[in-house]
Length: 291
Image (cartoon, rainbow, N blue to C red; front, side):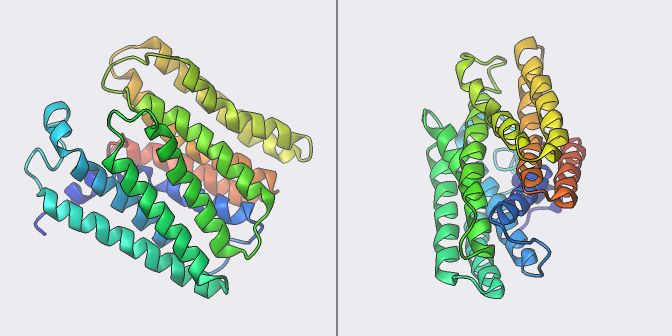
C-alpha cells in the first residue's frame, strides 16, 4: 500500500479511539470483572481494530458521496485507492475477531461465545457502512455497534456478566441513536427535528437512578450533563461549523457515559481513566477530524 501515516490516521479517525478504549473498560467493569488483567491488552487491540477497520470501510463505501460533499477525504482526493482501503478494513475486522478470541482464551472464558460476539460486532459495522445513507434506522445500527463493544468486552472477561452490563448497553444504544441522528445532518447546518435528541438524556437518567445507591456517581453525572447541555447549545445556535462541532463533542462525551457506568460500580480509579480518555479525545480531535 502506498498511503502515508497521516492518510491512515485520517481514514481511521483515530482521534475518537479513546472512546472505544473507555467503552471496553466500561464493558469489563459492568460485567463484574477486573480490567487489571494482562488480557485486557488483547481485548483493547481487538476493539481498536474493529473501530479503525470500520472507519476505513466507511470511507470506502462512501467514496462516491464524499467525492461530492467531502472531496478532501483520502479516497476522492487520490491519496489512496478504494480497493486498498477495502482490503485494509476487512483485514482489521478479521484481526478484531482473532484478538477477541485470544482475550477470551486468556481470561479462561468461552472462546466460541466471544468469537460470535466479535463476529456480530463486525457484521453490524459492515451493515452500517453499507446501508447508512438514506436509511432511517442507521442511528440504531450505529448504536448497536457500540452496544456490541460493551457486550463483547463483558462476555470476554466474565462467564456470567452482571445485569448492569445489559442496562449499560441499552443506555449506550440510546445515546448513540441521538448522536448519530445529529451526525447524519452535519452537512445541512441544522437539525430538522428535535425529538431524537431526547435519547441523549438516557445516561443522565441512569446516573440519577445510580445515585440512590452510590453518591460516587455524582461527579461523572454532573460532567456528562454539563457537556450535553453545551452540545445542545451548539446545535440550537446554528452558527457556521456548530453542528460538526457538536457531533465531535458528543462523540467525546461517550467517555463520560462510560464514566457514569464505571462510577456506578464504585470503580473510581477506572472512572478516572474514562475521564482521561475524554480529555485525550478532545485533544486528538484538534489535529485529526473526528467526524
